[in-house]
Length: 139
Image 1: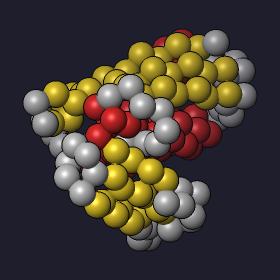
Image 2: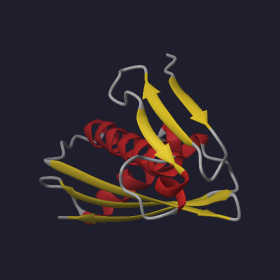
Image 3: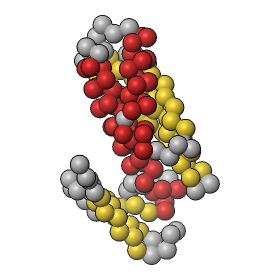
């Protein structure tokens, strides 16, 4: 499987503007700027936000597969991912997971969540110097 996205940038790093588009066209010329990345602007996206979305989505889907293999089906999995960027490097990806899963024990859920965190493709592809942490709770 191969997927792609395109980025276009015009101008300087601080005053320039760019757009992002994805193969599926879900993002189509979506704006990104210095202000959407490092400031308070909300009229576009940024690379770290997209990594956070990718990690949260990948983890949630992997957890669903792990739970299914263990004989459970989640009613709901809600995952937030916080990406930490400092000194020009992403240093941490923190997953905050809440799930509603009928008849699962806390211990079994924690084991399944740990498995998903360690084995989702995005977790596995992040640089080994990046700390991937998680809080997982049943709803």
